[in-house]
Each structure stands twice: as C-alpha cells, then as structure tokens.
Length: 391
Image 1 (cartoon, rainbow, N blue to C red):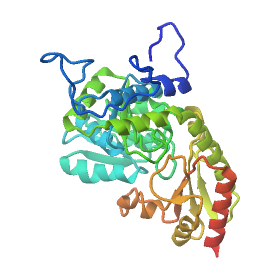
Image 2: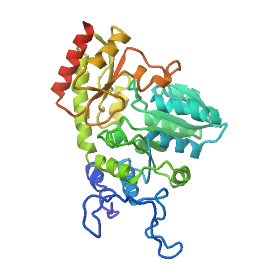
Image 3: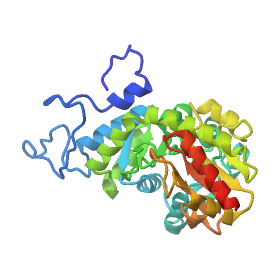
Image 4: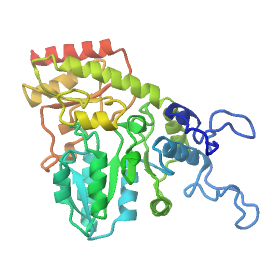
C-alpha cells in the first residue's frame, strides 16, 4: 500500500483491507481480480509486463496476497504456498542440508512432527525435542555450530503452551541459528513474531487467515532480503504455490481478520471461564486464564489470547470421546480457525501421527476451535455434552 515515508504506518485493520489491494487502475474494481492464467503474453522475447512470465513463478492474485501477509506481519516479503506443510517443507529444504540440526517443540501440530520425523529425518536432518516454554531447555537442546533453526509454535497445538519469542530469539541468534515461529494459532492480528526478534513466520492460512473453512493454504513471512531470496527460489523451484483462486479466498478472509479474531477471543474467554466451573473438567488450557503458566508471557506478546481452548476430562479418554460426539453446535471435525465452532479429540484425530512419540497427547484431551456464533449457544452445547458424557 503506497504511503509517504513520513506518514504514520496504517493501522492493522486498514492494512488488512488495503495492503496489496488498491482499486484496479483499469476498471476501478475494489476487489482484486482472480488471474486464472498459467502464462502471460510477452512484448518481445524477455519483455515481461510487470515481471509476470508464468504463474508458478508469479501471479498477480498471489502477489496481492503476499503483499498483504507481509504488511500484516510487519515483514517485507510474504510467500504463499499450497498448504501450511508445503510452506514448512520449502523452508526446511531452502535453509537446511543433510547433517544439520533443528530444535522442535515437544507440543506441536502432528503434521509438522510427521514432516520432521518421516520426511526430513530420513533425508538427513536431525532434530531435538524441547519444551518451548522453557528457555533453558531450548538452549540446552541446541547443538552449537550444527543447529540451524529453533522452531516454535506459540500458542502450541494442542496444549496451548506459550513460548517467549524475544527470549528464544536471543538464544537462537546467540547460537547462530534462526528462530522460526508458527503463528497459526495467534494469527497476525494477535501476535507479530518478527517484531519480537523472530526470523521467519509460518502460517497455515487455511486457519484464521482464510477464516471460512473453504481453502487450503500456507505462508512464510520474513523481513530479510537474503532469506526472502532463498525461500522464493525454493517456492518457484519446488512449485507448491498457492493457486489464484485459493490466494483470492485467503485475501478475502484477511479483510475481516481483526473483527473475527476479536469475536473468537471474546467467545473463547467465556467458554474457558465456563469450563473452569465444571467438576468433570480436570484442566482448562487457555493462555488467558491467570493460572495458565504462560499467561504473563502471552499477555506481553499477544493482543488477546485467541480462540483455541483445550480441556481435559476427569473421567478419562472415553469421556473425552463421548463429549466430542455429543456436541451439536460444535461440529466434530479437524482443522480450526473458521467462523464455525469445531471440536475434536486430538489423540485420535489431528495428532494421531504422534502416537507413541514424545509428542503424544493425553487421551482425555478435547480441543475446541471457538467460532463466532452466539457464545450462549456454545456454552449451552458444551454443558449438555458434558452432562450426557457424565451419564
């Protein structure tokens, strides 16, 4: 978005609607066009119009999305991919080589761990698992001279742990490593890791960025030209790019991200408070609760505490399964971040791939993606489901 250097940076809400999305100069359309094309006419050999040659390399709709993502994350370069895992894969292959070492979370999305353990470890990338909430543990997991990346989620998936981004950036950089932050659970609205020292931000744009459960996508954002060059080369060379329609859907979602995240967070607060009153719930995991071990760090680095809530059932695994199956307003489904509320059993669903590993999640755990419906309806639904599960 064009602005004079001496003007104040636009607010987040303005950037979400305007960054990369100026009205079309030819037609005046206020919504970016979907450029459903694979190739572009050249004005003579090598005479590219605005640099566009082939849509794997660049597409105007994807460019608009990438510019918006970069602006929202306070970065200078955004890269959009076909999925969050495609973004992670491109990052690791661009920046690591066989024999290198990475520190990864002891609580992370199952697909991320599967990629490390079954795709990149056989390729020769080594990793050590550490609790990202423990700065000293992360420092101890680093292999000086060999560790290239410290990889964290904050909040983590599904146990909602909190990593101190500034502290971990200092630790990583002191060892000559990069700090990568998966910001999917927080979204750019609630947290901007690059402003706190992170080197690369990862998103599954399927989730809060898209916001409507109708698109699969991923993204990387950086504020370093050299990193951007390496990542952009891999994006083009490997080819797992976001298509124009998918890019357009994520861009549409970003326009309402601030208002959605306010509602997600407010509803989650009410739901978490309700769950703390239930005797059949042994633990409520939401960083906004004062008793959460990461509450103070989250309050420092997040605008609000997000729409993800997890809880554990005092009666064990079967009770957790019974609750997720008894809900009627919460939809039993994987994924998160859409306007509709979702409920799942991580151990048997999104995190089944970490079963038997150090990242295995408790069987009595339930994860909620709290949507933007009437919060009274959401609480009533959880109450009836808990009552039915209790018999």
